[in-house]
Image (tube, rainbow, N blue to C red; front, top):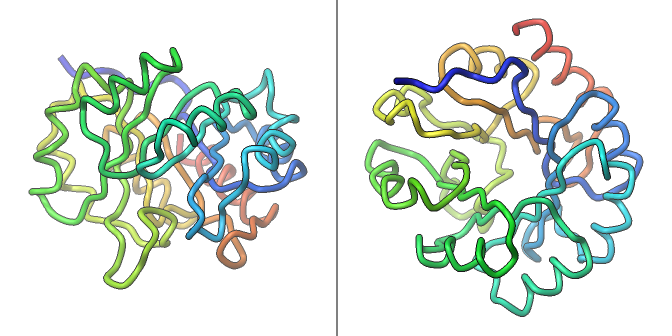
Length: 220
C-alpha cells in the first residue's frame, strides 16, 4: 500500500550560508535547512559558520548537515559544533556506512542518489530499511565536480518504477516555475531547493525564495 503524502509538503532549503537567509526561509515555512560541507561547492561552510547561521532555525526547522564521503573526524567536528538534527550523505556511501553513521551519532540519515537513467535507481533497494529517507537528485553534468546544486533536473517519470512505500524527497533543478509539476507528477513527500533560489551559485535571493514557497502554496 502506498504511503500517503504528508498534509503539508516538506520543504528543504539547502546550501544556505547566512543567518538572515535562514531566518527568511523559516519564516516562509521551511521544514529543513541544509548546510553544505564540501569544499568544492560554492555553498560550502565551515562547521562554525553553519552553527552561527543556523541559530534562527533552532526550534523552527530541522538542521541538516550535508556531506560527501566525509570521514569520521570531519563528521565528528560537524556534529559537535553544529549539532544537526539529521545527516545527509550525498556521496558514494555504502549501506554499511549509512548504518554506521546513524549509530555513531544517533541521528536520522537521508541518503542522496544521483539519477540520470533507470539504472541509477537499481542501488536504492539496498538502502531501504537502513536510510531513514531517500533524496533523488539529478546526476551532475559532465565536467561538474558537484554532486548536487547544478541546477539541472532529471526525468521524474523514472521514479514511477519505485516501490511507492519508499519515502523520498526530490531535488535537482527545482524552481518556482517547475515545482508544481514535480509535486503533481511524483510521490515525493518533500522538495529540496538550492540553485533555484539563487541569483548566482551560492548566493540566495529572498525574492526567489518567496516565489518558490508561494508556488508550492498555490499548487497544494
